Image (cartoon, rainbow, N blue to C red; front, top):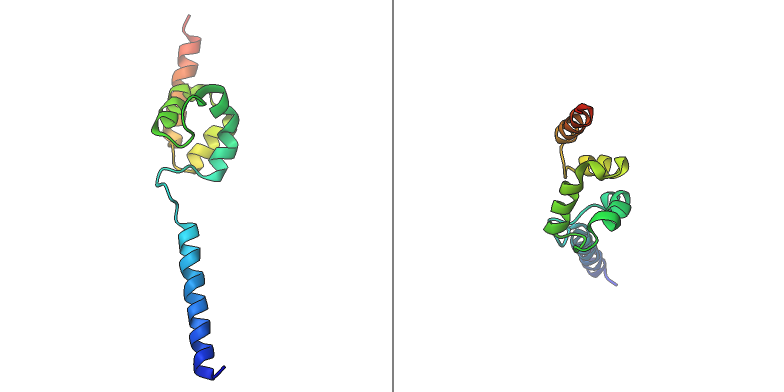
Length: 103
């Protein structure tokens, strides 16, 4: 190989690697849950929302409806992923405590 063809071959290989890497890193579904959320919430999903497709809007709504019934690890993962705010979690917990104190 001449120096020019070597440079062109390396450039083509690098371009292909960057293109493939970008494709792999780009989520195919903008609403896809992170792996951490899927792992942390798997038991909650199967216990409460498995009638819905895992990444569907119906599952998101189901998990919101379950709310306080979700495991702590699932809630923490959802907060970390930005699926729910820490403020909303605190507000729901406070409302639950308040309701449980009322006779």
